[in-house]
Image: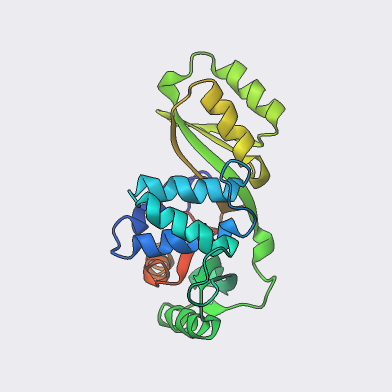
Length: 240
């Protein structure tokens, strides 16, 4: 079972799941705090800018956002430091999973991740075992209907350093190295394109095919991991 494109599931995933959770503000706060360690100004810190934009889409109060930024920059001393960690794992059919966590207790989180993997036929892998199968990308979706000259837009995006452009019936998907997030966003906004969604995420270099049963278990595994309070995102090289 496989999709036609490694970008097939890029749109769905993280924030759609978070929007259903009662603890969504807590997760946003963790992500903002971690991003703010590299600078508290969203205009010069693309990771923070993205984290803040996502939080605002979920109607997170500005006071909460500012508090999270201050915690990240060290202006506000509160609780244990949040660590950003990645766990590498294998799932049914040899699927590779790259799991991003934001935690204040890595021992607790490691134990919980291990138990979830065990329940759904997965195992932890050694560091470096699967990370090389993914690339960190800045990804944007815009509505195709607002693009008057698609060829000219694509040429301009390529000049910016964009590496992948794909078209669906209604959308244009734009992807480049994650360091280009701010550059691409500013370019699209300058041309007054409405950005439907944007994110920085790890994308598989190639998609793995699994059978229907394995895909079902993998879907359950990803959902169980997503439901964990410390898991921020799950990247997988299978189109589910």
